[in-house]
Structure formats: C-alpha cells, structure tokens
Picture (cartoon, each protein chain N blue to C red):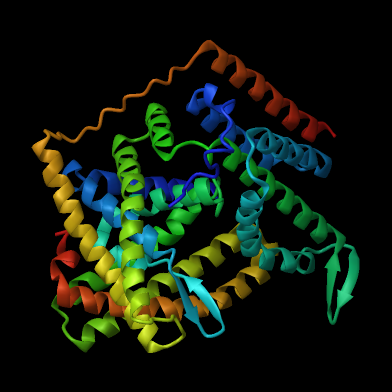
Length: 252
Length: 189
C-alpha cells in the first residue's frame, strides 16, 4: 500500500537535503500564515507558491489532482451554501434565496486557502517517508508514547493491508459482491471482526518477540539527520517572508 | 478551532498517561486495523460510505482510542490530503469523544450480552458514535461562524446513510467478536 505521494521515479532529491524538521516547521508556518490572510490577491500568490513548490518536487499532477478532488468533494456542500447564508449585496437570486457577492468572495478565499495548504502539505510532508516523519516529530519533542504509537501503526498498516486483501480475495473467490443488503453488512462486519482478531493475535506475538529482544519501552530513534546552519538560515528567511506577507495583508 | 485543539490535548494527556509501554504495540496494531477497515467502502442505497468505526474503537481500545484516532488522522492529513493540519485538534475531538462515550456506555453491557442482544447493542453503539460525531462536526462548524449554520444542518442530514451502515456493520462485527474472540473487548481491563 502506498502512503507517500511520490513513487520512485518522481522522487527528486532536492527536498531531501534539508532536515525533515525544517519541512515540518515550514509547512506549519505556511498553514498558519495562509489561514490568517484576508486579501484575495495575496492568497493567489500563496497558492501559486505552493503549486510551484509542488512542481519543483516533481509531484505527479494526476495523483495530486485526485487527492485534491477528494477534499473538494467534502467541502462542496459548504461552499454552495455559503453565498446564500452570508448577508450582503445580492448577486443573483434562486427562488426566494439570494446569493451575496460577499458570500461568493468568502467561498473563493476558502477554496484558495484550503488548496494552498493541502498542496504545500503534500509537497513538504507527503513526500517524507512515514518513518522519517515519525523520527522528525520525535526530535521536535512530541510525547514519546505518541511517536511510538505512530511508528508502530505505520509499520503495521502495510502488513494488515495485505491481510485485508487476502480476506477480500477469499470473499471474491466465493463470488461476494457488495450491495446494499443484510448479507453485505454481515460479511463486512465479520471481515472487520476477523481483521481485529488477527491483529490482536499479531500484536501479542509482536510484544512477545520484542520482550525476547529486551524491549524496555523505548525505541531509540537513530537518525542521520542533523540540523545544520543552512536549515536555520532557511527557516529564518522563510519566517521573515511569512511575517512580510502578514504585514502586507494587514496594511493593504 | 483553538478550544477544540485544547480539549483534544487534554484528552490526549489523560489517554497517554493510561497507555503504558506494554500496550503500545497492541494499541498500534489495532489502530492500523481500524485504519484499514475505514478504507472499506460500504454501499448504502445508491451511494457508498466509508466507515468511521469510532463506536467500535471506543469499545475495543477504550482510552487508547484517542491517540489511535489522532495518529490515523495525522496519516490521513499528511498522506492523503484529507482534513487538514490546522483542524486536527477539532477533528480528533469530534471523533474521539464519541468513541470514549460509546466505550463507557456500552462496554460493560456488551461484556455480558449474548446472541441477538450483542447485535442490537453493537448497532446502537455504532450508530450513536457516528450521530455524536455528526452533531459535533455541525456544532463546530456553527461555532466557527453563524454563516456556516445552514450548511451544517444539511451536512447533518448527509450523515444518515453513514449512521445506517455504521450501525449495521458495528453490530455484526461485535456479534462476531463476542462469538470468536470475546477477549478482544476485555483487553482494556
């Protein structure tokens, strides 16, 4: 199962020369800055920036688009309703409801913000190996237990996905077709139940195996990544840039 | 949004205190299983839905459901682009709090239930989990601005098929677990 956005031939190494922590912090600062911007032209600029960085990283357009569409599908309801619920000058009327220009502008801003943030997030963090991400989060002093949980979960998602596919294959071999009926719900219920039962057994074996190897509740996060002066320089330049954006947003 | 993040953090602190290192592998593997299960697309009428399974998570994982849900949401946000970085706190709260409530309400009864009762109790639990989540999502939308209120109400209506599927599947899953591996719902004791 593929978690990262890149596959082997699109992976361009230029982002990998920086410390993963820098990428995390940049993504966070970028998101925080973007949500606080109020001016539409600046939002366009921000979206352009994240598109450019996605292009530089060599993200494949189709994969990016597919994931963006998934998010858009979720927001669409919200966005259709907004022009009608924000009070303001009437733009057009639909029956007894009237859409306001102010509402439409809000919609535009939300779309710009959401897309800019998600694209940047996928560029900077989606291209990290999950394990590297876990280590970077650990180095940022997040609670150790959470990091452990994250690393273990990432490790076993792949394994359990194989298990899931075996079970689905067995169902298909018995001509199972999902439909909207009791049989499907029962089969899926049993499928999930079986998945959980096997996971529990697996986790007991894992714990036993880890105890045999002297697991004392700590995973040692060994990484070759080091925060370099270059990373600090870039972080300060970027912070300055974000501040500038916020300032111009305020002044304009 | 900020208050959601704060409450989530508080819940997380409690949950991580209760999660000792012995149980991390178990919680993680079960979290991974739930992550996989949520990829399943269940047909309901003309459409199909992806399950949240937070009622079931509350029963099986107990307090560990909170960090497990956070981890799953982080992975979704980062690798699939669903949800977002900044609403992570609210999302975790909206899914994890119903999970905790379901766990508290139904786990004791389920341990003693048998036969058909399990199915109905489980269905009730699965349905309730999603209904609470839907209510909380609408509430957080409404709180973030009165202009979102009409959309929030409609969004609540779109939860109906999800509630049905979730109730049915959770019911059957729990009935299966009680028969095959009753120790699974006692792991948190």
